[in-house]
Amino acid sequence: MSASPSSIPVPKTPVRVRIAPSPTGDPHVGTAYIALFNLAFARSHGGQFVLRIEDTDQKRSSSESEAAILKSLSWCGLQWDEGPDVGGPYGPYRQSERSDLYIAHCEQLIASARAYRCFCSAERLTEVRAAQRAAGVDWRYDGHCRNHDPAASKARADTGETHVIRLAMPTEGTTAVPDALRGAVIYDNHRVDDQILLKSDGLPTYHLANVVDDHLMEITHVIRAEEWINSTPKHMELYDAFGWEPPVFIHMPLLRNADKSKISKRKNPVSLDYYQRSGILPEAFVNFLSLLGYSMPDEREVFTFAEFVADLDLSRISLGGPVFDRVKLEHINGLYLRAMTPAQLANRAAAWLEEDGRQEAIAELVQERVPTLASWNQQIDMFHRGTVSWGEDARHLLVGCGSRKKKSVRLDAKRSRLMFEDLIAQLEALKPWQRDGIEAALRASVTKAGALIGDGFMAVRVAISGSTASPGLFESIETLGRAVTLVRLRAAVDWLRGKGHLETEIAGLEKRLAALRTSQERLIEAQSAGGRFDPREN
Image (cartoon, rainbow, N blue to C red):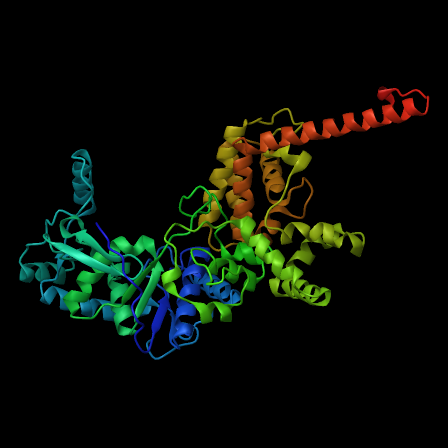
C-alpha cells in the first residue's frame, strides 16, 4: 500500500453525504464526530445530510439502540434531512428493509462473473484459516468455490443448500483508492480477500449494502473513519463491476486515547449518553468535536456550529490522530458556562434536569430517604454525576473486606476485579435494560466469584454510588442507565488494578501530614504564649 498527496476535490452539485451507524450498542462519540463533519460539509455546500441505519447484523441490532442513536445525535444538534424517522425520496433508510435490492444486485454480479456462490462450511473455513496461520500468512479465502460451474452452483442453491455470495476480486494488479486527504492509496489485489457480499441468511454484509445504498441514494461524498479505508478496494471493485462512478472518499483520522491507542470504552467513556447525563452542554460538545484533528484559520478555540460551517476547509484536517481529551472537553464546557449570565446558567441547569427524563423515577427511589427538601440534593447527587469518588468506602470494593460475617469469602483485589469484569460483560450485553435482568446479572457475577451476596452487592453499590448507603441497588442501576453504570464499574476495575490503592495511600499520608502541621502550629502558638502543649491532647 502506498499513497501520494492530493488536494480536496471540488464538490459536486448537489452535495449529498450520509452517516450510517449500526444499532448494535450505545451511541458512540465517533458517530457524532463523523456526523458533525458530514453535516458541516453538506451545509457549507448547500447539500443534504442523510441518516441511514445499517442494521444487517440482526443478532446484535435492536430498536432500542436505534432510538438511542437518534436521540443522542439530536441532542448534539446534528439534525439530518432524510432518515428512517423523517423519511425522504430515497427510502427506506433501514438496510433491513432493502433486502430485495441487495439480492437483485448480487444476481447481477453473478451474471457478469464478478461474484460467485460459495458453499464452504464453517468447519472447512476453520481448517483453511488454521493452515494459513501455521504457514504464517494472513487469512484470505482460498477461492475453493470460485471456479465452480455457475449453472451447477445455481442448481445447488435452488435446492436450498446453504451458501454465501462472494466478490470475485482480481488476483493480479493493483487498486487505487482515491482518498481526498491522502491522495491515491494503492493496494495489491492479491492481498484483498474475496469478501462475502450476501450472507447465508439472505442479508448483505456492510460492503455490498454500503455501495448499493450510496449509489442509489446518490451520495456524492463518503466522509467516514479511516478504519474503513482498507475496505475501500473492495468497494472500488464493486463500483467498477456495476459500472458506477464512485463517490469522493474522505477518510477521517481515528479518535485516540491519551496513549494514542484507538478510543475505546475501557479507557474513555465513549457513549454519547454518558456525556449528556454528565452535564456537558451539546454546543460545547460539538465545539470540542470540531477541534479534533481540525483547527479554525484564526486558531479560535470557541466558536459556533454556524461559524464552523462558514470556515470549513477539509484540507485543514490533520491525520495525526486526534486525542479525545476529557479534560479539554470540560475546559471548553466551562468556558461556555462562564460566558452565560447567572440567569442563563440557572435556566440551563433547570432545563438539563427537566430534559433528563428521569426525575420521577429518581424521586420514587429517594422519597423514603429524605427527611427534608434540603437533603434532596444529597440523595440525588449520584444520578447526575459521570464519575464518583469513594474515599473511606473504597475498601468495600474488595468483596467481603468490610463484612463481619464469619462465612464471608474475603477476595483479594484480583478476584474482586474479575467479579467486576464479569459483571461488566453481562451488563454490556443485557437487553432490555431493566431491573430484573440487572439483578440476575449481579447475582450471577457475585455467585461466580464465590462471595456472599450481601458483600458482592455492597461492592457494586459503592462502585456505582460512591457510598455504602444509597437507594435500591437494582433500581439505581436501572435509573443510572447503561453508559454511566459501565463507566463507574470500569473505574472500580482500574482501582482494583492498583491505581486506587496508591491514591488512597497518598490521601492518608496527606491527612497525617496535615495533622502534624496542625500540631506543629499549635505547639508554636503555645510556646509563644508561654504555655504548655501536649500533642496527645490534640
